[in-house]
Image 1 (tube, rainbow, N blue to C red):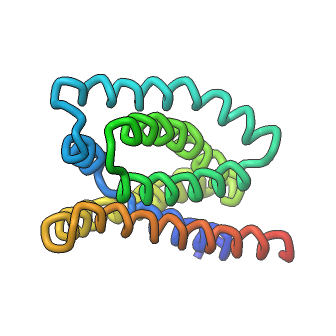
Image 2 (cartoon, rainbow, N blue to C red):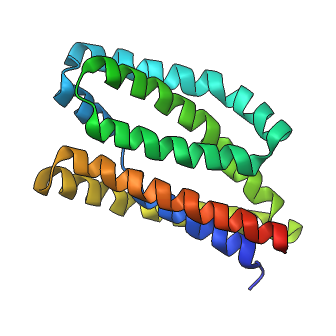
Length: 185
């Protein structure tokens, strides 16, 4: 009752996004399936983490300069494209590129969503709002991986990523609606 429609709508969008963002283990499994040797998996994951770390600061600067909403939207769109890419990837070069870009996605979104959230919640309820946000996102991650695993085993490994791409795309569309509604408010 302490939060307006903006907080609720944003938490729904973030929850939907998390619902399609299955565990990164599926990325590793996909890399192995496409042909990345098990010896190279730690290195490809290191590449992901290195780009994630390096891109976080410039992403924060870009969010301050161009707007958090634009950077979040870019992150949602990039995620959808990347997950689709993981679904269709057929060679190790593509996997390396996708892992690097996935690090960029993480740099763009991880802190920016929380920074944006801080701008749409009442000062007196920031702790509660972050608790609600993290609870919803955290709870959505469990079924994301459960669904991802079921799709991997019963449909195809690519289906796991198509599902993530679909939820990422839907999150981007809803976020555009959200942005438009904020401007009218």
